[in-house]
Image 1 (cartoon, helix red, strand yellow):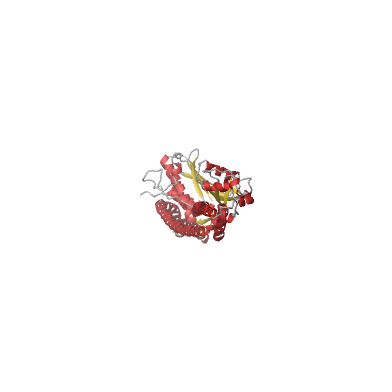
Image 2: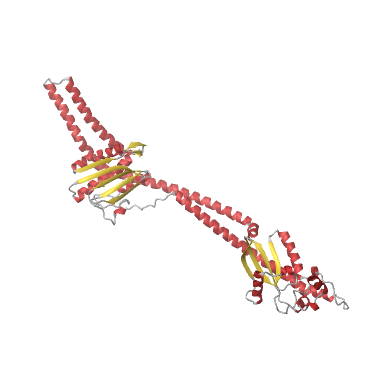
Length: 479
């Protein structure tokens, strides 16, 4: 059963990604509400402009004719009062009242290219839009404009086309009310024609005013998004912790399985390493017995033989301790000399190496301190050494050498383990640290050993990689 390869990820990177995503969504949300606010403002502006147009039509079609009919026939002239007869003045006054009540930063204006009142004189931008209305290129106009480093929403509509009644004030100045001539003069605002579009009305609204008017929606929506984001991050964190725990359990299981696999070869090593000390102890006892039978057993000879026996027992005891530490399930983290760890690791495979004529050379430029579980890092070295042994045997390598070197490179403590047992195919060398991937025959390997090496080294914030050398491969471990 193959193990699904999990993708190792960093929770900080995930959080960073979601913060970026949150910022993007917030920006999109802000733009969405901004567009929605502008759309609402446009509808309201259209409604206001239509209201202004209706008021103007009322003045033109109802109020002014009624006022004119009330004139006394003998009167050739009558008083002109803009508060009663000027549609522009009346609509401007009504609009100013509406703006004051709503507290909105709107600017309403009527503009014309030929106005009675110079206040309504269109500038170049306004005149261009008005002429487009006259050419019937557009029926209404709205856009975003920049003025004095501020953004505005601009919406304009043409007033109704001139009717015959409009020419009473805007036709021949000789026919205009006397009061109008007195107030505005005859230099502008006359000689209009029926059917022409005389002017347009527009609203100019500051974008900041639109956003301020809709700030409650922005705040409410922003808080809702933030709460959802926090809940989402909490869920991601819970999933991350659960997944991390599951992966740690899987890694521990793999490490344990690998130790059990290594145990078989280790038992042979224990047996082999104890044969010579046991033989020595047997020889010492026989020697003591012979000396005793011949009455040659002196105090000095007893002391010497006891010392020899103690040396052999100490060697056997150290061997047992090394194996006991290696197979201990406890992860006791403490400081260890890398030199001692390499020596203990070699001690566990020494018998097998001697049996298979494998020579191990160690060159230590530095002896750095490793902080962690000695048994775990020993497992890394033993796996690599056993792999090399299997390659030597499989390839029937005549001269079998393993070269271990420790040195400093920049800020890293480096250990290289090189063997001359043959190169790995370049097509598969990048896959050898994957779980259950093995270059050996099915009955010789399960593909767990090097995967365990990678897991253990990376758990101590280290790296492990492999590359081909001239005659074999080099494993490089950095802490």
